Picture 1 (cartoon, protein in one colour):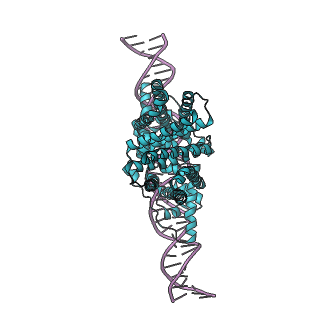
Picture 2 (cartoon, chains in turn green, yellow, brown, red):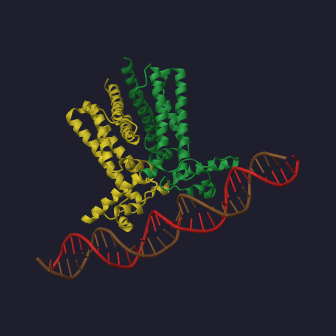
Picture 3 (tube, protein in one colour):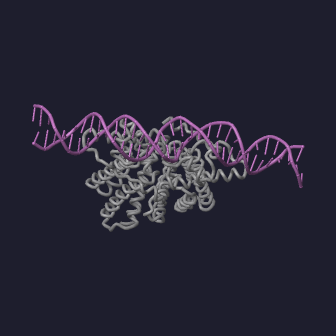
Length: 216
Length: 216
DNA sequence: TGTACATCAGTGAACGCGCGTTCACTGATGTAC
DNA sequence: TGTACATCAGTGAACGCGCGTTCACTGATGTAC
């Protein structure tokens, strides 16, 4: 357990010149492709460097090991997922407040699905973040951040303080939301539209029910 | 993609003698321990054999590769999770029918959490099944099976045919249920009791709402 | 009950290969004057 | 505008190690007579 946690995830040299930035991006793209093709159990710095069209020491210039590469890849996706969430908040709070938020959970899931699909190897990246111990904090931190904002917004809207329960409900909703999106991507036999529609209804119903109790 | 799928997962020789059965179990236990200790990206047949106290060719007697070992480990856990589901169905259908089922979603989640915790490396096994392509079918098949039963039971209870929508809702509930259990195990900062309570309420509320629409 | 024999279970040694990592080095880029 | 120089970026070669896999083999177990 301890050994697994001591993996260095920080990047080494930041790319400064144009050429270096292209190399850096090529490494991340190669890693994403290989995550899809050979999987987390087989990906290696050797494979990534070869696919990126560079030699291995060039990769080591920017990353200390493969975990750092996957970490950078995962952090990027988490950032984009967080951005979707924040944009959704802003849009709906400006517009119709609480009602608007609840009515548009389905839009949030849809956009989250989209941003994950747009990232090459998006699903595989998320699964890797879950399954590889040194990377787990990236995903947890993202979910905690978003859930915290969610709880704060919900509390403000009904003019109460953020309670432990509210925090838990927000976090639950966030994780359930991502679970629904991942499920739609993982099982190709499922009807994506139906899954998102029913899934957002589940979250929606949960909150309407909860707000009734808080207000009434 | 194709290459990943062509991994042989079937076991080779079944253990026949007592000694062999102990060896077989030792392999699975060793794999579970190592999944926790070194992770899916580092586990190898060499490590597993060493930990199990046997030589590598002895492992190859029963399994063609490490995926087959993980497959056996995962299939065992899925079986036990399915059994929990079935037991829960039986108990509650005998007792109080639909009401009893809805009231006891929380009991189901609790028992699922328990059976996963009781399996050494239970969480890591589930995560591996998700993240490793050749193993994904094991988990999907389990979820599909349980969701199918769920849909049938629900249809019977309100005397309708199983529709596509009902099937989707059942599957959603199953995956959300497992997501809640995994979330409780993945994030140690969370209050397990609260997560299970709110999570089962989410599923419960979803179905009460849906049944109102079907019946009313 | 004893033992010979068939089958099952596990070993020791070997193989070629890809892994992570580091070194001293060459080549490319940008900038001070 | 030209060039010398500092810094940045990437290479080639090498290392020891653990990987997956197979072989001919020895040892253990169970059973037929």
